[in-house]
Image 1 (tube, one colour):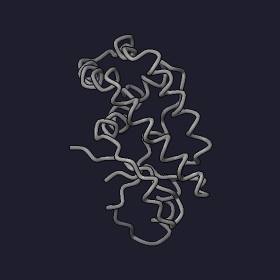
Image 2: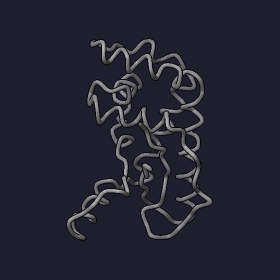
Image 3: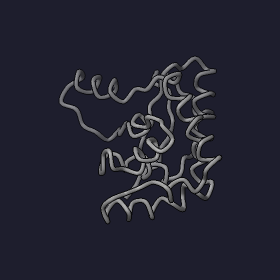
Image 4: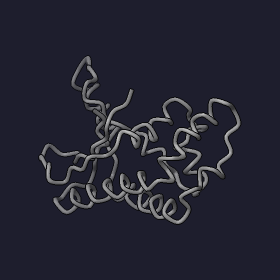
Length: 157
């Protein structure tokens, strides 16, 4: 199972020209945090490069049902990410992976489940796939920022 990720502005304005297709592997990479927490490939990668990547695992799912408007507002507020807060981290992650594409081979995972997770993502992180996806995310954020957006959602769907 997996979704694709889109970067969308947090206001009601529509900026489809800023949208880029982000590969499903990126969604799987970032949602590893939901399943494995601190032992996820997302967090272990961040630790390796000395980056806090937890915000990359925050996704907005539109199919959620809400009991009331306040619950919906709270959920959207929890998922909102400031562009200026996350953009430097994404740029550093892309640069770090470009400089060390085989980094995941050096990351230590302890359990068999964690090792399986590592093996699953080694191809994605070393093949330029993740670089392409991070570049698209950066492009989308810069486009949205240029159009006046200050916050984004990582929309999963």
